[in-house]
Image (cartoon, rainbow, N blue to C red; front, side, top):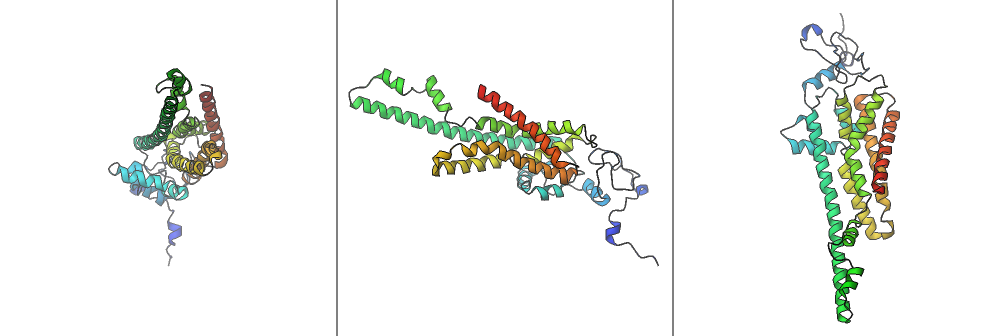
Length: 305
């Protein structure tokens, strides 16, 4: 009597191709897997299990933003929250889950809009505080000079610039730390700069036939932490300034490095767990060096202007 194979032995058996009319393709490079026995793509080297590949092709992800156009707010919130547990997030997401590029772009646009709103709020609060302070100081100086019988409009305008003048506008603009503007630009451009840098390395790797959409998905979901990090560090910086005014610029100087480190870690997990690349650390490190150099160049150009 022949004993049946245990579940662990049958879980990775290839499908019965004679009973399957549709093609089964590699989710990374779209190579047709029909007729293969080993769960490994001969084109790009991607390894998988037959059962998991077929299941992911049939079923939608439980909460991914791309797969729920009719539940946008719910899926957006769930996807953003899940991204802070990168190991769990990427282990539940399979390359076989269908990619909706338009939804990925929408996901990035929503995060971009929220980040710009947060940045505008920071700038608006700083401008409002500075304008109120300038107006109060000017009014106080005018009252003191008038009471002392020494009021001069020319003197007042010279010492305390009138609202709307060039010196007044310069004082207001200087109320915002200038490093925030290029940093916000880095947050917005990071997924795209990383995507382009990874495509450069992809051409020299064995897995050069991988679909760019898969890399784009990794970059978008790795970079969606921009808004929470921006708000958290600004809040920490504000509390620190209140208690220790001498440390005003320390945390702001660290903003780009903190974001790059965290986003790079999330991207590393994506490449290791989701794409299953070899030499993950070297690939991500090289790409982020390129991104950092471009970011530094943009900051340098901004500082010169």
